[in-house]
Amino acid sequence: MTRSRPLLLGAAGLIAFLALWELVPLIGLINPMLLPPPSALPAAFGRELTSGLWFSALLSSLSHYVLGLAIGAGCGVALGILTGMSPPAEEAIAWVVRLLRPIPGLAWVPFAIIWFGVNAPAAIFIIAIGVFWIVYFATLGAVRAVDRDLLEVAEAFGFRSGPARLVKIVLPAATPGILVGLRTALGQAWMAVVAAEIFGVFGLGQRMMQASSLLATDIVVVYMLTIAALYGLIDTGFVRLQNWLLRWKA
Image (cartoon, rainbow, N blue to C red):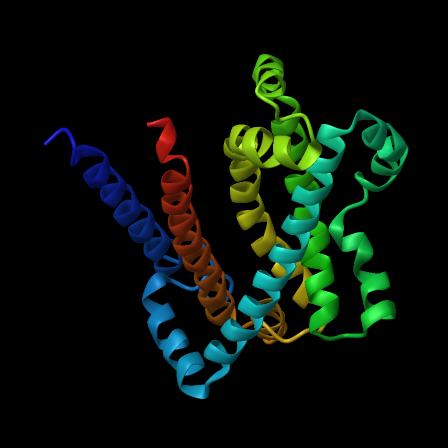
C-alpha cells in the first residue's frame, strides 16, 4: 500500500484537476471559447488527426527539436570541456560569454530569418541557441568540480596528456553533472521549438498560432498537451538512459 500511495495520490490529484477544469466552463465562470473543457478535446484531436495536420506538424517539430538539441548540446559540451580543462581558454572567452549569455533566444529570431529565411534551419538555429548555454554551463561546472586529488592520482599513473586525461578521468567524473544539464536542456528545447515556429516555420508552434488566430482554443490545447506528452516520454527515456550510464554509482 505504501509503494502505491504516491501513484494513487497523483491519480486522484489529476482527476480532481480535470474535474475542476471541466466544471469551470460548464457553470459559466469562463467562456468555453476561451477555455475549452477536457471533454471537447478528443473531438478536436480527431479532426486534426484525420486531416493529417497533427502528424505532419509532429514530425516537423520533432526534426527541429532533435537537430537543434543535438547541435546546441554538442557545442555546449565541447566548449564546456575545453574551457573547464583550460583556464586560459575560459579567460579568453569570458567577456564574450558575458556579452552573449543575457541575450534571450527570441532576440535571435530576426537574425535567424535574415540568415536562413523562414524555414527549418532558422528554427533549428533558435533551438540550438536556447539549449547551448544550459549545457555549456552545466558541463563547465561539472568539469571544474572534478576532484583535484583524482587528477593528481591520474598523473601519478601516467595520465598526463589532455586526451588520455579527458577520456579516462575527466569525462567519467563529470558525466553526472553533464547529464543534469542535458536533462534540463530537453525541456528548454521544447520551449524553444514553439518560439522558433511561431514566426512561420511549420510545426506544432505554427499550428498553435494558426488555431489561436481563429479562436480555436481546443486545437491550441491539443497541441499544448501534445508537447507535454512528448516531453514526458523523452524525459522518461532519458532518465532510464541516465540511470544506465550511471549504474556504476549504485
